[in-house]
Length: 431
Image 1: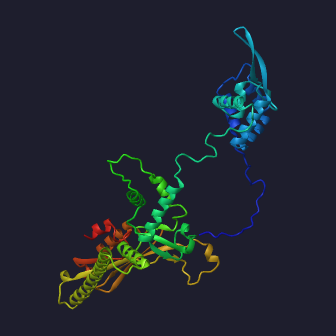
Image 2 (image 1 turned 135 degrees about the vertical axis):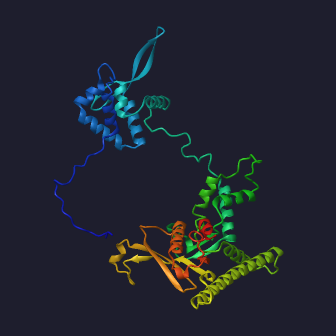
Image 3 (image 1 turned 30 degrees about the horizontal axis):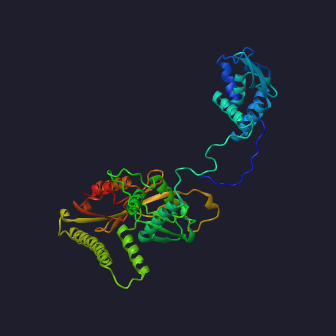
């Protein structure tokens, strides 16, 4: 554990390591050019500058490296324009004027074309493009501009299409989303206007919403249709994560909320908001399905209570000697409890705020027939709370449980956490 505070330390000047500035690309290119044994021209300009004006080469390299692309290009164009001259040229017996460049960089003076490229750290194609640009723009030293500068991309969605996608996402959120007010664990949801976030069921996905949008607009993703959709999936995903749809999120699979209950409640709130006097047959069927869903939840609770009573009754008979151990039907309930922080304080002090406390995981498993609870306590560095840890702890308990309570037939009930207890691996083990 480390506390973040202000401490005064005295360091001697001799103990401080020297600060070495990184070598600029120009100097690295000059070193490589010389180490490969190359010669730029018969005067060997690069080697001559490196041997006699090494400090100037370093200073010029740092200056070029500190400039942005636009500033470097403007300086290069200005240098080229200042060293243009008209040289005579005779071809096919008729003289004509030809613009030439006297390559020169202060304080190095005149140099060859190859040394000019090395010092500026550019290529031959870049120099040719700059000379062509100057010739077509009256020797201007303004940086070059891309042809589409200041215009929107051809792949940008139109404003009307963006509004259509956003409106579709908002309608889905209003119809199937569940309002959740207050503080949320995700930082990007803290600043939502009104602090009201609409969570869609965990069965929803972004690709599913995208397909739903294409179905509403008459565009499908079937193999028979080869027409290009109006909106790509990447553009739809970007709009789903944009600011207008920031308050609509998909609930994570590890949540303890029943997706069916959430969708039934959302549909019921939507029907109440419309204030419709007559109920349609579809709405009546929807209410019937909701009642059936609630009835199934009650039946599941009754099964849990029946198993609990049976475990208590058979355990009592075993203790009284009226029933052999093979007739004991055990019932185990397991779940992760809230993690404990060490050290544990009822009231947090101001100094403890800056410490990173260690979390201790607590996995509880209760034998309801014997009315005994077994707790597994381990540090966060030893493991987490995933399905693998639940299976490992259950397996360890079943192998090391007391012999007088080692029932052959047993029932397991877990908390409603699908990420830990109700996943396919745990369900396979329970079988």
